[in-house]
Structures are given as C-alpha cells and as structure tokens.
Length: 205
Image (cartoon, rainbow, N blue to C red; front, side, top):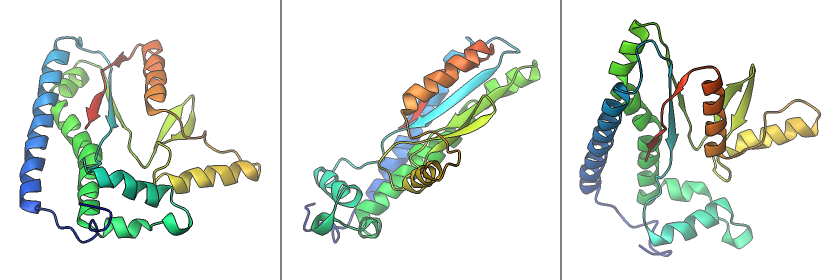
C-alpha cells in the first residue's frame, strides 16, 4: 500500500473478520481474568468504579501516518478531505476498529463485571461506569459538567470550536481538551475521598 495506491487497494475482509474474532476473544478472556482477581479484592457492600479508556484503532500501515497528516493537518495543496479516507478500504477498517476499541469493548466490560456488580448491589453497594473515546466525554465534577477530549480528532473538533466561541462571546464554556489519563486519576482521587473503591482501568485496546 502506497500514497499513490491506497484509495484503490482492497483488503481481505474474510481474513480481517477472523483477526477481529481472535481479538475479541483475547479481550473478553483478559476481562474475565481481571474480574476474577478483583472479585476477591472488593468486599461485599463496597462501591466500585470502572473506567473504560480507549486507545488504538489505527492500522499498522506505514503510509497511514502520511494520509492522516494530510487529512488532519493538511493545508492548501497538501489538504485531503476525510471522505477520501472513509470511502477507502483502509478507512472502513479504521471505523471498524474504532467501534471495537470504544463501544464494543465497553459492552464487554459491562458484561464481564456483571457478577461483581450483582454481588455488590445485593449487599448494599453501588457500581458505576465511565467511558472515554475519541469524540470526547462529559464528566460531572462538583455539580458541573466539563467536556474533555483528545485533541486533533475530527469528531471532537466541533465541540472544541463551540467552546472557543462561547468563551469569545463571554458565555461560560466547559474546559479545554486535556489529558485523559490526568483527568481519570483526578476522578479516581475524588472517588477515594468519597470512600468509593477505584477499580483499575480496563483499556479498550
């Protein structure tokens, strides 16, 4: 696959589906192992917090970095519309991967923690979940919702632009994009102060 051929190159979708199935099984098995360890660490009646972060989804193709730079950073003659990527096989693979590392793995986490959730809720505790993705996430801190996201990603750009406009016109805006890891640890510290148990992060990658 090269810069000249990538829009016309075709992928072996049956083989990709086999690889996807292997990856799903690996993730589900990993979640099961983690939950088995956590089950003995969390006492009855405790509060548990599961944070699902996501990373990955970009195919390991050398040419992809050059393509992404043109789409997300390109100007003038170097600019390329995102539709060109989304209509190509490599773009469709990206979208499939993004579904896996965001929504699908979050569902696997919810399903995989069902036994712990049932036990804690039965004994007076509570279980909560949060998920972070490329498009951004609203979190509630001290009674106010704040928007956070990775930078330089298409789905998050409109929200960031909206925040900038609100600040320019003197209206209150949610805070600028910031580090997912930093915000997650801040949230976990807040939960510890509230005597909620912070469960280790399970990454959707």
